[in-house]
Image (tube, rainbow, N blue to C red; front, top):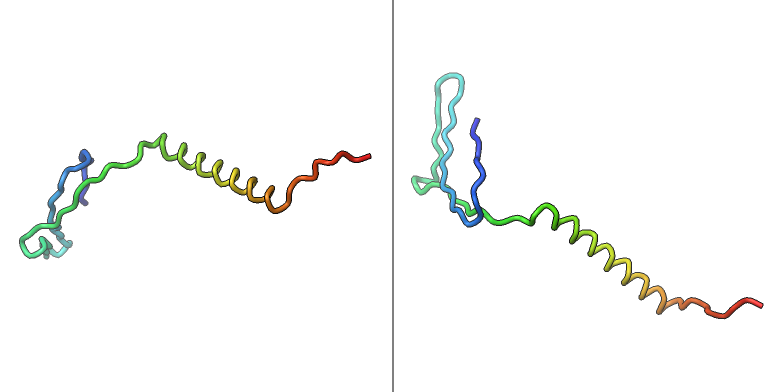
Length: 80
């Protein structure tokens, strides 16, 4: 079984796949000799993702509150 190690962002990874079975047969898939490639992209830091999620929820709640008050304003008259 293959394992892909971690690489820094911007690294271009080239690879081919070699497979064997229990009968001793094998196959090589190398994109017709050109190899397959992909580029590593950066990810969000793990602490940034929950922060963005919380901010989006707060913005949504504030927007709902503002729209709701424009449609159905709160009656500010005091009861007798």
